Image 1 (tube, one colour):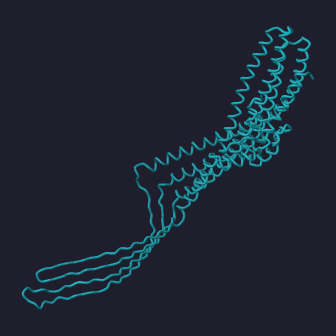
Image 2 (cartoon, one colour):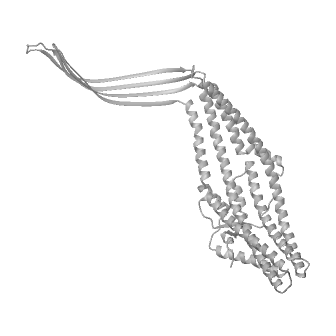
Image 3 (spheres, rainbow, N blue to C red):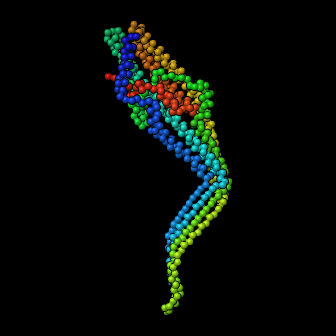
Length: 482
């Protein structure tokens, strides 16, 4: 092993120790921590939760039309009635004050209402659809958290290799300059090294920006800043999915996929809505039980009698009596109603709901086909990514061996600086490809489980076991060591 390779290893060790030193005071967060915070803080899942609870009320509301309806009313009035009638031979001046209390109770029960029955069936389908949709939203949160977390790890690994590549090329540039100054290499090799270093510098700056953006994307889910994350264990095993047969995953998807369940329930709901509109022309029969009670209390006072002009002894009677009256009434009614003509509204609604049912049928077919296609393609993608992880791991070993051979040839003059730079970049690219392959495998595996309806928080916890707090992932890697 030559001096350059030893120096490169020392740089990697220095970067790790520097990162560990500045992060030792911080407690690293892992995937489970981020997920649990997102469950409570993510606005998307909060909105989905509220939507589910709102749509779940559809069943109760539609069922209400089939259950008895009881209503009560009450009123109170204080009235004064005065009559003054002054005629030539008759005098009447009466005043009546009355307190009236009125109570009524009405119980209504539908005896026959076929549209209401199918509305109730539609309400059950819509409530179950809301439940399935919320389950799909919860799985989507798992995917979004996983993608955001591992995108941070991906960006961090990429930036670390970009920085190491920049430092390695800088060392090579310095050595080439020294060789040029003593006349061992031509100036063209210095230019080649300088061009490679400038490109590596730009790549490091871009990777720094990508790392900062990935941390910001994580903040969108939780609303909090996350400075230190736990990295993925180097011994992470990219095992093949179980079962290994794609047809088995298709069967799981057709049985458990939540989006397919939503489409199937929407299809049933639309069919029941069409049935409800179809039978709107049928009569509706209601049973009504009614009870009314009135209580009147008051007084009536006044003067009335015959008055003859010129006579002082006229017959005038003063009266005063109390009013106390109570009435009760009850009734049993059977009401039958049937629409005869409504301006074409019922027929229009019938046609509209029939078309909506057809649309829901076709949407279900589309979702079903896409589910099958997604299950097969994701299974193939996971299998490919698993093989890619193993191949990328081996490519690092091969690239490192090639770099050593190229450096040895450069030392004896059989290889030039371009060969060395190319071998260096090949090694760092192999490391980035290996890192990307691991994260691609993780995300594709979780997406496959989501399509099959098998994704749950337990997958987060199992994956979290592969994250090591001693592997520090933070923004410190974006800062160049002095």
